[in-house]
Length: 346
Image: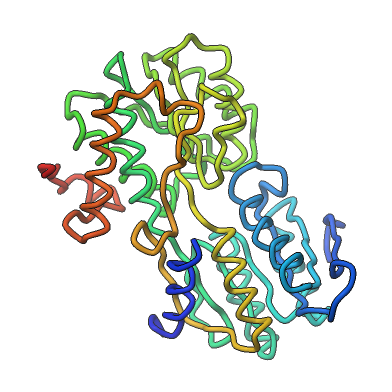
């Protein structure tokens, strides 16, 4: 694996912080020299998830505005759309095509060799092909901070994790969150449930209802579009009951009821890679982005910061500094979580 071929992009991020008739649109912004042709295939959650896919799309929109990129987006209604969508975009002559989501791993691994002159990028998975850039994130790090915050804000002593599809990717969120809770207050209980989907809003609301009814007063929803259902449910709950959003800044979706959002800067990664195409050079290999690189973080908590004890905010900041300095390695798997020993903060 060419793990170091894309160091330049990682440094930029640090500095910048044809099938079932899917939706399609594109075109350069008005005026100026036409830029590169860039496209993306959404995961099944599609645009409007206010989370993962929307974050990637913001990066494309920024590319369109900033350097006149011609942008096309194909939405996937099911996994059967992945390979035809990727192939269609390659046939259309796009110079860079994003496969947004780990579920597209096998499809991209099949398509990429058939279009060796087209460069692809995949988010949240690793496809070892010479014309593919793989971008992954240390979601466990921002999830850890979310867990610290949840444990220190909880009044009931019970918090929860609501995942989408039970998979190695979502296990990173769950492991980091649970480790953060343990590190802040080992007496706080963590409930865990999975919706089995990334796009079932009703399931997100149903499972969030169960978790709140079981005593949780903070629910971290790392479940794509299902999280919208959890947010809808928390609006009906009494003060002091929160959801933690994911991927995008979801705080404004329910001001004062979303404690924070665990950001994953897919938008920045997409924009920076698109920018490299506009400059005529696209790095291949693997890029990994965590807190240190500005790839993940928590929101500034615009609507809830005043509700959180100063000591809790200080604890989050201390743990963040430990992670960035390499003094704390956050678990990213169930086995690592079992072996994890909460650190002592300075």
